[in-house]
Image: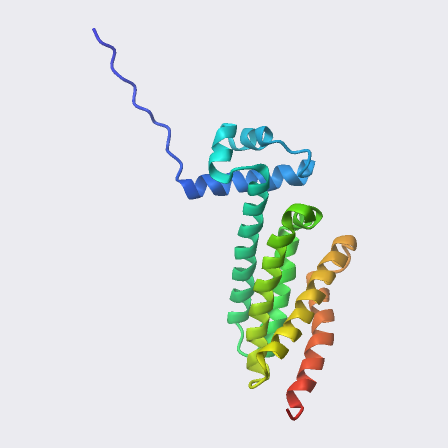
Length: 202
């Protein structure tokens, strides 16, 4: 008598879901052990897959780190844009968008610190995040001071993005500074100055 075949009940995980699981595990392990001390074997074990699966999806450990940054870039734009879209005036857009930026970094603190510490690998990818935020803020500022030359808007946006980044680094060294406080510090300098520029005859 031929034994009856036992059906395979294991669910095939869609590629996008599997990649999300791998990136989640990688960020957790990188945060625990540091990038250099983390092996692909460890990440694979955390996910519950074989090491070749990781290489199939991301190519290398560096590719996995860059994938984590790419996801963070997309998430950051989404949370900032969502916060800004929920407001009705330019000042609130900048304030709420800035607060969303700092709040996101709080939620992703270990990952963000990892990205910043691995400058050799992540410098170009982090620059893409800066460019993304600069473009977004320049568009918000255009609503406050219509008719301003694009290069001037970009210059102002570069100042704000740079200030936010330095505030984020400072907050990483001083847990007492809240996201709300950092937002106020930015607004006290940037918005007051920009409001004056908006009233100036061009």
